[in-house]
Figure 1: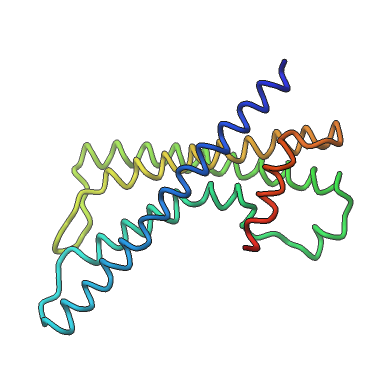
Figure 2: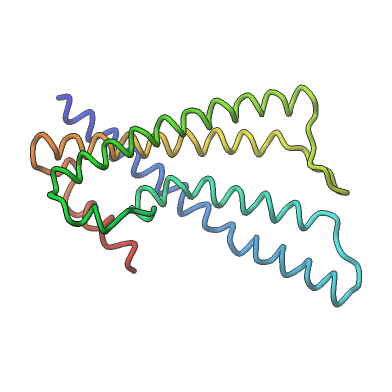
Length: 186
């Protein structure tokens, strides 16, 4: 029963992170358009915008932060392969569990700080120091959401590694695990 609940949590987290990761990827063409429009306005119309730079920073921040959990899910983060690939699968499980635990702590700190920054941004009406001067509170909400999303994915990965360490079996179906292992090379 507990294994079923853990598997359900991992599958639910996988679905949520995949949905958000794939959805946020649609902001890439928007970012490209904003940057291209600014270049066109600045160099061809000789009339630069006051909003394009700030908007492109926000969009890039959203893509990078919200894409972090998806990158973790796809195992696209950096790994020390020279050490990692020379040890047994059980030692890899332990390495992963330790690094995921450390990352969860770090992400919890980021989430707490983001919530504090959001409260400050609302209280003091923080704005970007630019001519356009957009408000900053939405950015800190996004950072808190991205932190929670990454913590969910890291927790799911930790549970999978723990299950594999103690049972020698994969927690998730083979088709899902094969998809995760093949995706970064596509």
